[in-house]
Image (cartoon, rainbow, N blue to C red):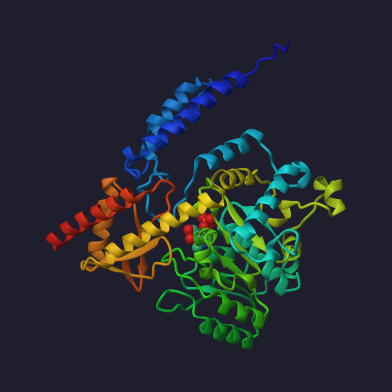
Length: 481
Ligand SMILES: Cc1ncc(COP(=O)(O)O)c(C=O)c1O
């Protein structure tokens, strides 16, 4: 036996502390409703409670867990609370957490097929499963011309799609020579800000990302898109890419994919469909119509880490033509050369993403899908939509409020008729109370409340309480006015 000095955690210690951590997580979830949903700390408060310097000597593990409870929990906004209605959710689940834990336990870095074949092959397989589950076109299957890959976020997916589009439009010259300022991309004025960032990073430039006008439902106007593309072509520019959104962040607007796809086909533009939040709804047949035309997309992404119970981070991204993506992102330095890659018989996912290294994310997705089954996932998605529609009905039938945008799924945009200040006050009071957390947007220049029903454990009683609390705060605002 070696008597070499070691500071490592022994396997027995790991087992004991690991059980304690799992117990802590289970307890946390069972008492989560006792915490204020939005953290109530002031800026700097958490840091001020931490020691100025790192410990010279290691500390007992129990002390770490105690400090999580004492020092960290106050600074947590409880995303997993059933009273979390803000932004879009980042929901999780038991199988998702355990899959993520196993991924850490295996500690695999799956940049190449050969650096862990199961990491690559499970990912390919699960993304192939999802194609029929979501009613996506067969061309996205790995057995066809395309294939799927897990990205960290929808922002990365958009960037990869934009880069591939840029390369395809310039016959793969801009990777070599850089952009010449003539390449143009298109999205609606309601598109997520990640497209603006992608345009910055891809060298297209924010002013060459055309933000197309939307209709009264906040969906892209295809005729405005066509006009802008034609004007850009006449000006000698090179249109290359359009992003259509299934469920915009601000109001859950649905861009008309089929009409946009038609324009893309006419002008040979890459069509990326961003379904980050609402793509999960496609698990249910009755919501397929929201993404009619997806069969014409060159790429598509949705985030199981938003609404499909898969612990952050997990964005599924498919392309119709994997060769275009790989040619855009592939670089093979000598130190990564290996027989499997040279044989051409394997997928090396490093060629499908920005980063080189990658985690074994498909494990948690696999666990979630196998735990719930398609039936279980559909059940909970339908329930969230039902609860949201019920909430929208309450808003519609209360003369103090109005619904501010269509409610196709589980996001309700609404406002008190008392004006911006009244709405802001209602929101701030609710969030300060800790009873629930909701956020806002601006629609047609007006401050608008957003309530999204998508947290894993949200039930009717939580949505009922949210409406009751909103009404109570509205009452106070009206009295004060
Ligand atoms: C429609 C849409 N696209 C993209 C994003 C960006 O998501 P991510 O955090 O995965 O980059 C969001 C985030 O809410 C979104 O709603």
